[in-house]
Length: 551
Image 1 (cartoon, rainbow, N blue to C red):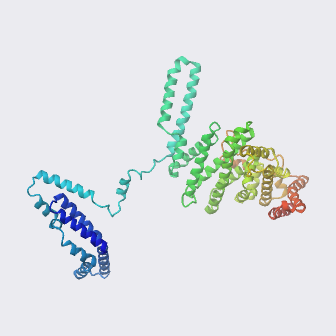
Image 2: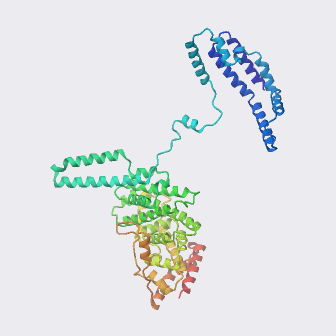
Image 3: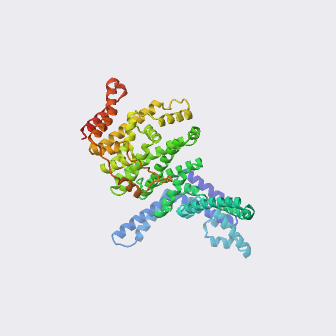
């Protein structure tokens, strides 16, 4: 025991001695309790060490089948404890304690309160107990329930958001819209007879909206993917709600929120099972199909909108974020597909058709070209399907003819000009704003890369490949007439169409068209080496050799 601790103990005992003359049962109880706590703190380490030694001896005896700790061992440990300096100093000081602090509590109470009546004794004991509890130090043992109680609700889990709650909320929203429309129709036909019913329906719809959250609000608060996808049918309905929110053109704010929910749920699926997303792999595919359909829907809107200012302020950032999220999602899905070894073959073909459809649209293709001009993600996904299936996908989507035309125009098209103008008006004359030449060059490099992948992966004759690059290639939309992404069965039916073969003369004409953009790059390399790097030169050289070998 240190000198400071000894002085503190001496001061405490001296104070208790001075207070003894006027001490009541309350003071004695408090003093005894404080003394017990002080003794425990001063001898705590020694007692713990002795207990550990006894436990070790006990374990050794049990291993030797010799029973409990012998009395000699116990006596030896107690003797060691009494011989410690801390015990000796406290023992010397304890001799000066008042007798009332050393007697048992029942004896002290009977001596001090012998002349008091029973009511006073009861009240005194209650007050002394309360005072002792107030001076009681914090518990050294851990209790989860005590900790939760002390936090007063800090450990309360958020309410679970179930799939059926979201479905019901969406249904209530549809019913409210129908009720409002029906009420308006009835008012036009017979205002006097339906005014009361209309007011009742409107009031009921208002009450429903006030008493329940919307489907979007519930999806934003959802935490558990198992609650959102308890079965296949429920998850399909959730996907439908999410997709309808994405393609809703009337509320751009909610559209952005639905897109954020897509990213949030996709991230939750990816974090499951250590980031592999194995448990919710089907959910990640469904969410990505929604994004593919959304990008195609945005492409159609860009082509049809006349007011470019509306496009600039509302959709350009969302368009870019959607394409960026698609590239990231494709990377995750590709890794999952490689590690899973089996399954999702139909989804892979369906996704490949959707990606080819996106690349067929000039605006989406230009945005993706700015992100990755060499289209590495397309080459990865082209390797996930067989050569014959890839040819069918290219034939149905018409991507071969589209990229060949872009190569012939060196990436120039009206969509690139329009996109550059929108970016310039939004960002002004910022130094990071890409020039029109940058957009066209990225578009051209992307088309060259895709053309190289097509010629190297299809592994077919020039005659059979004619159906990919002919001007009258089949153009089938990945979206249905109402803007919904086609199902896997519909995609399989589309891929079953027969291919078209070219004549000898048409084959040679097709060979010349395929060779020209790559030879032009090589000629540019010879005239102006600084404009063509070594990687692009190698790409063009290998592709020219491959096309010349086609027969």
